[in-house]
Image (cartoon, rainbow, N blue to C red; front, side):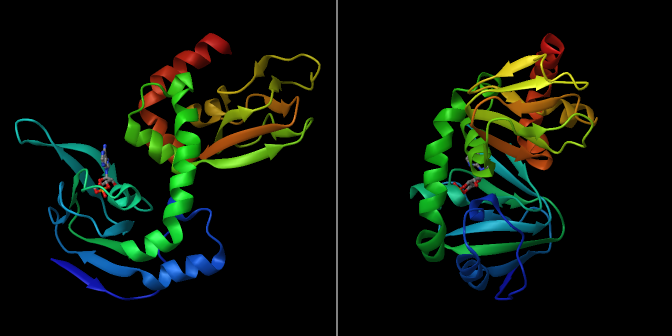
Length: 257
Ligand code: CMP
């Protein structure tokens, strides 16, 4: 059974709300309704329907399913705590692109209406996707990601502006971030030997994957040679969205380090 109440504690953060200020965030929190599911298999969204809300998961697991030609539904994505779904119909004014069912016996979600989403979130979220989607499609290591994963990655990116000479990561530190170079040039060095560049990085190249892939400390320091713009994702997003690229990333690591 799906139950909806208006209860205002704090919903989990979503990347879609990343660029909002505290005032706008408060409006979002006040507008959200709590939704509870009490069994697996409850359908929250039906593919092809008009969409009037976005959901943010606090607890529980949900499956997004798309109908194939023979009518069978195929699970295209599994969403968990902190993930949002139902954003496409709101962002692009289109029918629901997939159906979404609960996959656990108990789940807690937050539901945001289209009017509040349009007034506060839509413009910034669309701009961020527009700005980064085409850039991400030009990054060769990401070429096997689907269009939907590229959009999700665009939502999740954080921008870092580095001055020439500053260290982005330091050998020996614990590492929780993966970086893609948007602009500028950087180099990797290790063991106190800053004059000896081990690898040079420019636009569309990436670094910081090794510590995340192997659960090790940073194997080298990476320093900005010129003022640089970097796009980063955290460990959770790296595992969730770039997990399918693990073999490619390992092969890249073997060829380069
Ligand atoms: P929306 O189309 O509004 O409703 C169904 C939701 O399923 C959709 O937004 C996305 O949030 C989610 N979804 C997950 N994976 C996919 C996918 N591969 N294609 C389309 N929608 C997806």
